[in-house]
Image (cartoon, rainbow, N blue to C red):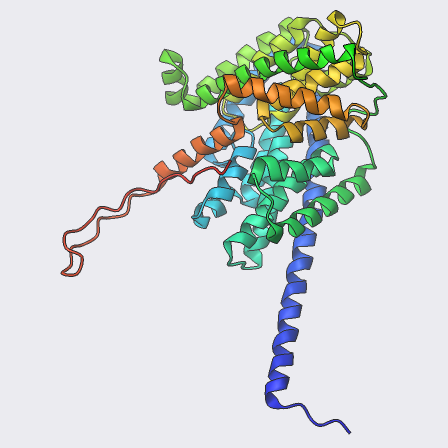
Length: 469
């Protein structure tokens, strides 16, 4: 007959049981949040597609109506962002990077709320309906981070590493669910969001990516973003396309990033003063410019550019150089307006249009392959994350045969872009965002003198966190 357990042993077993129960409660909550990210990403995609469809019907009915719809839509989006959804402006990726570097979680709690996430979805959809050249993928990153962070708050997580791990997992899950590219979600989280790989958070991130991706597939089926391509780039004379797309794409993407970073610091002259003093009116003016570009281009500069990019990749359409030039300008104007919206999809469309135009001068390379190289070259130059760009394009087109050429083009474009724009776009935007957060924080009062410390020493204002690179 076994002896009875001692009181100390019974206390130890009860404590172990409580710890195990708490761990499983946290795991189930995080898994549920990851599933929610996948569901929200699918719903966001459906809303964006519906907005694009409505816009297409409006243009078919009367293209000139966009002279009213686009300025009015951007003005309304700007006003709602500043009035009800502060923190929802822009792409959403800089905000996510900033929250990973903030030590003041009271600020993080204000940036990653379900209210901001809802505003991000609603206002990005409004922008797409109005014809802004924006995407939903960057906003999905912030939405995913907000959902996972809210889960962490509900669980009362106290350690900084655990809370940052959930934010990182949410951002990666957002990319994976938005593009149906799980590997790209993981690489993006490591290369762009955190710039590191920490064993403590890797399990949470991987689990989140898998669950959100599986949820998206369960709802809409297993698909590839741009379909399947069978092109290849054999080593030899075909690699002239690698050099061409890498250099020219790097120049274009580097210039684009430099312009956006400069615009974030403030537009020059009277235009900058008008934008700062009358932001809603400035957004309406940007909308008017976008409507004029859209009418001049036959409507191809409106929205994400997804259908134009896919038609170029499939070889069903051939656009002139004016397409990617006007799309380039429209994306800059859309960003400067201050409305919520991402840069991923428009950048991919610009790169595809550029590649399709360059292909006519490179007869030794399959045109479809040149389109992919142009896309990865320009996109890598914009985000300055060559691995992420390569993996995203590879997974979106379901083609591993061009992996080596994609990597070579991506890293070449990255190097060229760094010579033009010395700072990563999203990190620079995150630094600017952190600077704005620091200015909004009240300066602590000076310390009172005491016999032990002597005269009071002014406490410096909150300084912006350093972006890890």
